[in-house]
Image (tube, rainbow, N blue to C red; front, side, top):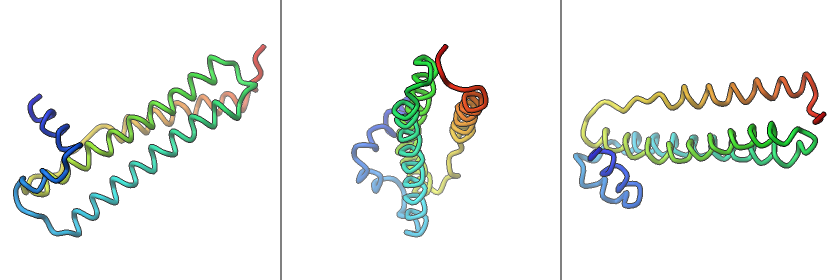
Length: 131
């Protein structure tokens, strides 16, 4: 729990990371930043997909439309938060000379996107008009 609180503080004061260990090769820090940006792009795509489902499928039954849109929006929010957390954890690990952290989040995100995609396939195959 203490580790989580310290990590959370670094979200809002990234300059404090410099106090941790040694400065890594800048190429690794830049690669970490590119990974962060890739997660943010993914989050933006998921959020955009959520809005698209809500705005461009008005004929879809409200509950299904809202469920799909909210699933995509929630995945986007989680992905954005994960981007920050992953960047901080990796930067700290590199500075401390530790192994990079592992996570189940990519698997969970992939599964969530797959579930929404399957739901959308069902909607496309069987129609979306509320009856």
